[in-house]
Image (cartoon, one colour):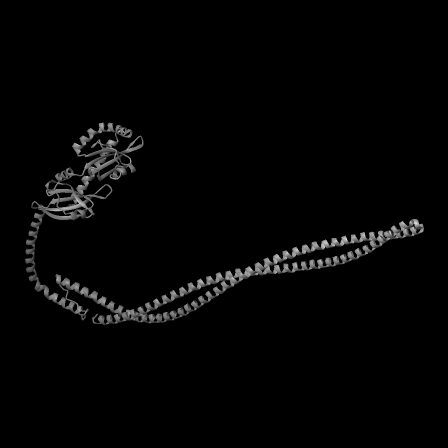
Length: 593
């Protein structure tokens, strides 16, 4: 049946190659390529319609068409009036041949149904133009030709499937189909479905299997039915012959068995007794059967003796190994007990270490908190010191400004003192003038007195002048006293200004020292803050390390716990092994070796 299926697929492949060869032959014609490149549909129809009619009548060609890329129908010689439709969604072979520009052949579903197709690309002057296709329908004509080639013993049917619903496409069977819907779907799913049916009183063997398209996907199911009448008749004759031969063979076997039973039973009974003793564990492995003679029983005795020798050697080795295993089990038990004690000690120690690491981690966390607090305090102190430094700087600037103003006031007072000196000089000149005026007035009075009555008026004037000179002298004295007082006050003011300037300079010096100290304090606090940050980072790293060590200790403790359980199991296994070794020694001792 498989060979017939292979013949079906081979016939499909041959027709696909023939379709491709015809396409290639047409595509190689220069006039065809030129007309296709120009888009001359009328010339192509005129030249190729006779060719299509001939191929259709003689070779069953159902389709002959041209396409432009990617998959547009240019000319259907089997339907010349229909062209220009896009086949991209329906004909993957056309898309592929125009995309890869390589020939494609195989089975594919098309607009007009299922067909065997062969396509080749067309190039003109080095440019890709489109593709040419020949198609042969996979229909009634195909199945009838195939069945005729195999004679009356083979029929086929082809089924297509749409939405899991089978549809009969073509059949050479009288009943059209013999298999069920489920069998067709099973074949569609990739299974080979075999069966037996009767048609017109003829026994038929059936096979259903999928037909794949050009890309390897199932596209149809072929149903093959073969007349198995000849094979059924041959099988019945063979069965009857075998039954007769079997009856004769059984009769002869009974006679031969009866004749040989007396010769065979005695040696077999002896062998059976020995085997029974061995099977019950009471056997003497040193005892041997009589193996003299040339018959099969002597050969059996020889093989039995050889077998018992092997068993004797094996039992002896088992006994020796059992003794060694018992001794090794005792040593292993002792080692397991020591290991168990060591594991218990290790578990206790790791528990203590884990507790200590937990306490250390808590201490490190506390240190980290204190370090963070110290860092915050240092940062606050640093901010206060910076603000104090700024205040001192503002004080220095204010004192410097005050010193400058005091200096300016001192200079003004000095100028005033100098101007007072100038006033004193002017007063000295005025006093001298007043004295001279007084002398002149006195002289004038004397002269007026000498003049008598004629000089009386002049004497009055001289007297007024003398009075004026005296008042001038008196005013000058008062002014001198006032200037002296001003000079004294000015001197006191100058002295006070100088003392203020000195104290201002001293204050500036002291405040500058204070500013320097605050700057140093600021730097020191910044250093403390940086060190606190470093200490905090180090403490955090130590905390992480302590936590990791704690986790490692916990894992070690868990492993120690598991090891303890494993050692307990090992000790228990050693105890059981010792019991098994003891029991094995007892069983081996029952044999005589």
